[in-house]
Length: 418
Image (cartoon, rainbow, N blue to C red; front, side, top):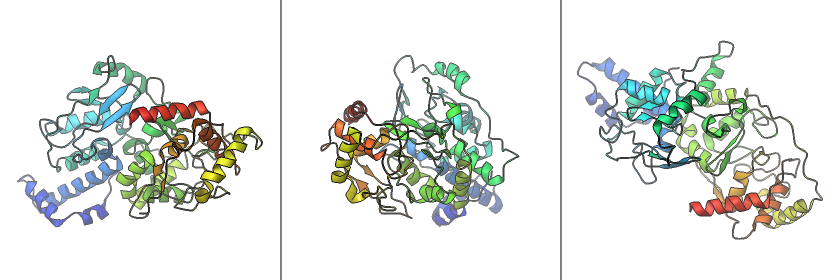
């Protein structure tokens, strides 16, 4: 699975090359220095593919120095300092300890929690993990003591992960499927491994383990719904081409939707910086992902009182941007008609967007970053529910109605988190 991320090498200042060369062991001559540089740059690319910076950088903090609070159903965990500081980071770890943490979830301080997605990273090859370690070793050591484990009793007992792992974790590096082409296998390696897409997009058991039978079919995470990314026609990527997927991951927008929320961050930090061949490989793999939920629900009748009320609210509030047809404006205002996200089983993201508004992602290829305002001040719970019921069941859409109780619950949850 070796790769040559030449575009990133080209962007690195020559001064940094001199620093890396000077830091190389005395045994290294020119070829060794060049090899070390290539490993570091490959590690930089792989760390980007894994979006490591997202969980290990606090707002306003130094990259990879930790401190970002991660809310889980069991309490709060904090992203660790993974700079090469020997006291508060991972500078004192051996290579074997680093690989063990990534592949087995066991660090020098004890068992890790799967908020650090070692159930996915176990699939990453040792060579790729050591390349990431080589890149991390070039970072500025930041002295930033972090206590990652802030869970309440009994979840704060790390030894409890022995039982969790026995039930939910299967260690082992990725094994290519000999019956599939190389591009498919590369996509599987990225999606299942470094990309750890299932961490957000696969529904979880009551213990927080993946429901593998429903892999990539959508899950709620931190009051967002990560949608179905299988090839399901109604609520997944069945209507998207491979080119649509590549465009979305590279730019944050395509003819169907615009990324926002956690996915906007993932595109900004990670997928927009991946090579086109890797994005194509990811798309190839996702388009081959089957779903066990390809049945289309019966739409709510147009004369239902919720639909009637919702239509009036839509015309007054939404159609200036999304149009009477629900078609929106490509790359500016997402289409609602036929949208898989709109028709998801779980309307959490839709409710949140109406209540809080949203900011689209800005990338080098699509820098506009369109925004939608909050309507929480204007619409009560019943009105939001009626509006979304209408949107989810118009223009050929079909999905379960949204209840005012669901809106009320999320509104209160978001208010308490402020």
